[in-house]
Image: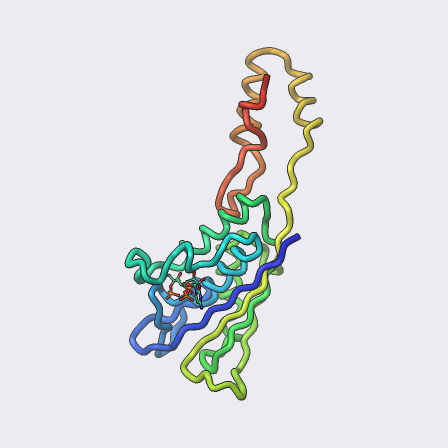
Length: 205
Ligand SMILES: C[C@@](CO)(OP(=O)(O)O)[C@H](O)COP(=O)(O)OP(=O)(O)OC[C@H]1O[C@@H](n2ccc(N)nc2=O)[C@H](O)[C@@H]1O
């Protein structure tokens, strides 16, 4: 198991669309940023990268790089999903807190959870999004997000089961079929951004 922590903040700005958790929200102001300003996806991205010690969103997508000007933040999330899959992990659950006066989160939390769950390939029950009023904090005009993500190892099929299939099917055509299944039909991590074969054919003698 691994745990990751993500944080982000952006200032509200009139005249730009508000996007939080990949969801467009009807609101008089959006969030200023080099990208689309989606602080929730940024904090989730950082929580995932942090969980596998892969750096942070700024090292992958520097705010000084014009390439990411106005970028859709789902791109950043996809990279983080690839990084955790490459490290051999998948998400168990995430818990998020959004701290801002407006908009209120409860009325839109259902849609937001659904969108984030889709982006992460998770069941809705494994995505929690809560709103918090910044009482006593002097952060009027700023939105803040905190996220924790729990990861677990991706289970690999056991070796004996794979070899049984070969022992029962000695013809060349059957062996080709088994190899094709093992290489192209490996464990499905597509929801995590990448599909990995179960073993390398170079290992065969
Ligand atoms: C998503 C993007 C897209 O370009 O921009 P925004 O839309 O938020 O503006 C960026 O990835 C958003 O990167 P983010 O990581 O939040 O930006 P910053 O906080 O300014 O950090 C930029 C880089 O500087 C490093 N950094 C930051 C502060 C600090 N005291 N020391 C550091 O070493 C961070 O580790 C990061 O690698």
